[in-house]
Structures are given as structure tokens and as C-alpha cells.
Length: 232
Image (cartoon, rainbow, N blue to C red):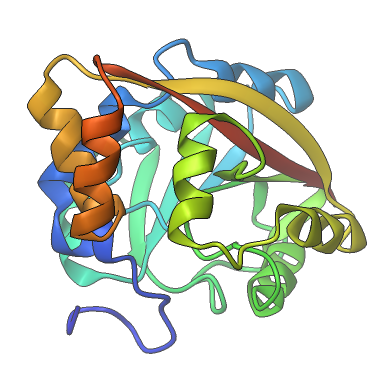
């Protein structure tokens, strides 16, 4: 964590366990429902994309294929280095170290912004939202992927972990910020039980992770998410 820029919101799951988080990325949304929803709202062809909180760059090659260009922004130096290794050989992809509150991008330099479980959690993220407004060109679209804690197996686990979390209050916050909500029914799909249990351990406290693993059989977990989006 010492490698992170000042102002970064800690992400203990990927910061401390990037290899396990890679397993989680591979398991999430095997049907491509999130990408399909984003493409329906704002087709990516020709877009200058920015992936905020890109981590090890898992999504950057996909954006490089679908968009004109992509810049990944990541506050953690070690993760940013891993992201640069991932995009080696992709001439239309780059990685810059920075935070959501101070994006290292010029004004009106992006057409599509994507943030997935990174910084934008509701109240408190207003500085990052102001940066989105600065860097997105007119007609640009911001996409924020976050948990839908109101439903589903993962949503139930999330509420048991954070009983004070109020999904309705979060929805009202995004509505006030001019965002629309696209609920998406997705899932985790793992190839090995050990991978699922390892991911649970980086997402929840040890006691809860063990309890959830004992309660849930198989390799799949239904996982509802909210795709918040706004055109600028």
C-alpha cells in the first residue's frame, strides 16, 4: 500500500492479493452482460476510452480492441506496472499513475470513461465526478459498475458484511448526480472450488468468508450489479 498515491482509496483485495483478484476478474460476467449493456448505451467504436482504477489492466486489451484508444489510470504503482506489462505491444493503449480525483488527462480528452469497483461508491466521490466532467468531451459517456446489494446471493453476502449499507440511499445519490441505472444479472463462474474460496477470503473477513463458503455449494454465484451511466 505504500506504493499508492496520496488520496487513493485503499483497495485491499487487489492491492494485497492481485493474483487472486485476477481469478475474480476471470470468473465475473462470463456472458459479457456488462460489456453488452455498455455497448448498447454507447457503442465503443472510435471512442477515446479511459479506465479509472484499472488495477493490473485486466480490461485494457478489450478496450483497445473495441475503441480507438484507451488510457488506464491507476493510483498503485505496482499495479500500474503490471498493467503496462499487460498492454505491451498494443500501440493504442497506455497506463498512467493517477487518482480519480486528479486524473492525469487533458480537458475533454475522452469519449468513454469506465470505472469498475474503483473509487465511485456513492456519497464522497464528488471530486472524482468533477474530474469526469472535466475530461469527458461533449457527448461523452461515463460508466460506473458497482454492486447491487439489494438482491442476489452476492448482494446478500454484502449486506451481511456491511449491514449499514443502504442501497436505496446510494441509488438516490446517483440520481441526484444525473446518472441512470441499468441493473444487470450477472454471475461468478469458477473452474475450481479453491478459486472461489480464495476470492471470498479477499472480499470478506475470514469468519464470514468461511461461513459463506460453507453455505454455498458449487462453482457459480449469482451476482447482481448496477451499471450507472451518464452522458455529458
